[in-house]
Image (cartoon, helix red, strand yellow):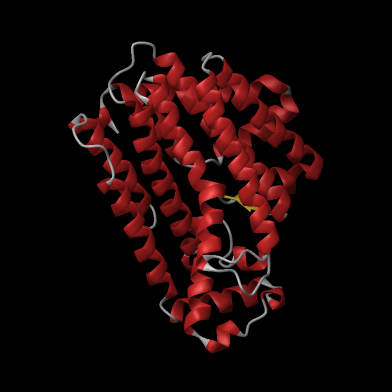
Length: 317
């Protein structure tokens, strides 16, 4: 990401180092669980958004690092809590905290990560930043509640699904961009424009992640195809497939009780063209994100933001 400036890799490395410090700061047992969860967090896309949204090289980079760390800790907390709720054995091919240490330890590890996020961000002494991350945290919880309410339902609409994705995933991407602008001293108007960009990128990320659950091999995703189906989570590919196939419309989600049945259903979903339709929707959201970037900004920052959006698509190519 040096397209945004040569300072970006150094701040990402500082973010990674601080995440490791925080994971190690809560005693050996919790450190092990928290560290494993943070390590399973992926490409650090959310901290990257914080840094790129800030624009030019900051005079005081420590605040941006703290903001990036806080966003990633919230993300990590949601991962470990999701694994508890889903009774998930694997995360990116590794045993989850729930699988290796049990529900109690996993719940505690997630709580510690969530609390650590706000403790870290509070060091910036910016109430507006804490409010932005708090709003995202509340949205995450609401999205999870909606997902639980929709579990195994036959009649989940596209609109309901997209709203759930916005709450559960996109709002944290939005917060990452907002924090970057605020910490860099940008205006409320700039923060809102980049917040919309982040929200769209986050929505596309979730759409494509749900496609990968149906299409992706286990060696790439770290889990079996159709895990969402087994959990009762109704996603866009299944919604579209049910619209296109009477046979799939008649399927009771509660009847999907084995990995073999889930994989077979994945093949049926793919045969309807629902995966391509879902990808097209995600690509259109990414295009809207790029088109909505503010005019007149620094060309290097604009291109860096475009590259972040494009990387979401490339991740699933």
